[in-house]
Length: 171
Image (cartoon, rainbow, N blue to C red; front, side):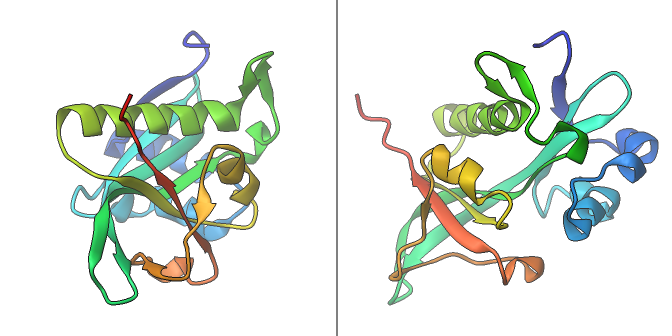
């Protein structure tokens, strides 16, 4: 697997070289990769899954928090702003262990857990899912945000489904 794909931080050079060819099937998500916001560390950090000559997928992560209905903070979060896979890799199996989409999400999880173990405390992973991504997240332990919970959404996420994954690292 590591011989085929590599996950690396997104750079202006990668953007110039590959972003225009990336197509996940959602134009707003495609445009983020082409926009300067994908390189802005004040918005989030973007990582790309690349093959030899293309961006296979990407994700952008930042921080946030969940509030209850009284606007009281329930816990910090790592927020997945975007997670997308090029259409060419939708429903593509890597091996008997899983799909490219699961590999990309797993890479994101590993990075998030590394951040939690070494750099910053938080209780949840949150995201706003498109209808197309919903089942991937649901199969991997995410739940829809409960009615008494709130997260801040980006402008393009108004029709998305807010979801969360509690991280209980107690053993």
